[in-house]
Length: 345
Image 1: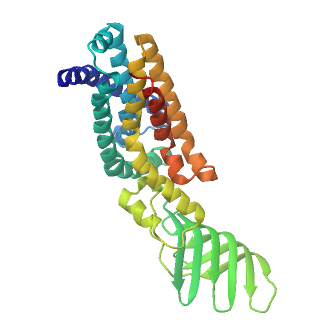
Image 2: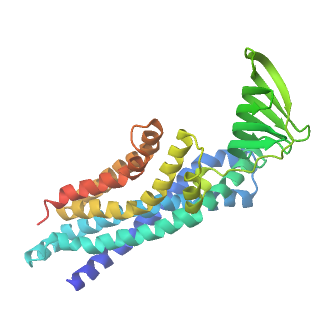
Image 3: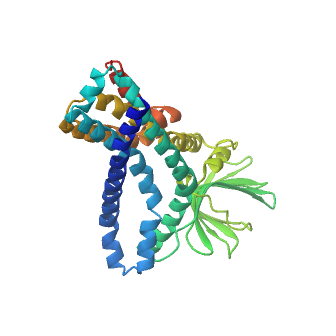
């Protein structure tokens, strides 16, 4: 049995490398087609164009590493079925389910590599790609964002739902509240000028104790604090940062839900290779020719990618809990594999 497992591993391993290269080429082609026009139009230097590709590699690996697993498993088992090698194995009394173990080993190995990529390289690469892409598109560094800014200066409370730095000394504000000892100011938007040490608010409601709220088109209030520190996007934060951020008190429901989904996806995505190995292995052992194996590759990747693409929308809309939305593509593949596993003898 050990010899049979090694033979199956030697059959599948080269095909995995082929599938991995195929998906990397496809993803590279897609990237080039989407940025080539901008790069040529803006006369982007070669080193920036190269960095644009280099910093995108971890995201490509996140997709190519697991998707190459069903390619290798189904094509490899399809070749064995075509040459009647699987029939010879069954005739010798070997149970089909016993051949799943080397395939699951491949999935587990790829999952480990994907976990390292997704949680060590990918977050910093996403941050670098944003900076490079912004320079390519706009020839300037990207604006810095801060979510849920709160500061107390001189006995006054300053709050903004988001702060986006638009220049070296200015930033735009959204969802503003300023509380002073004598009044509360709320505004939908504003501008932070660090040189003038002020917040200029637009569409302001002024609520003073014992008086009716008054609306003013704009109002300037003093604010002497320095710019808020930059809050990286969730895709640019490490697993540890996400875990610490999720535990912070005072988060809005929407922010906490987004954090939980990103945290769960960081754990779920690496295990996609193992889930796909389960589904592809069970399906490949039931198919009897290579043509159906190739069709199986296309259908399986399509189903997984559709579920993976729409999972964030299910989480944001509240249609599914964050953890279930993040794990749903894997659960779909495992359920499909277990359904087929009942037909293996």
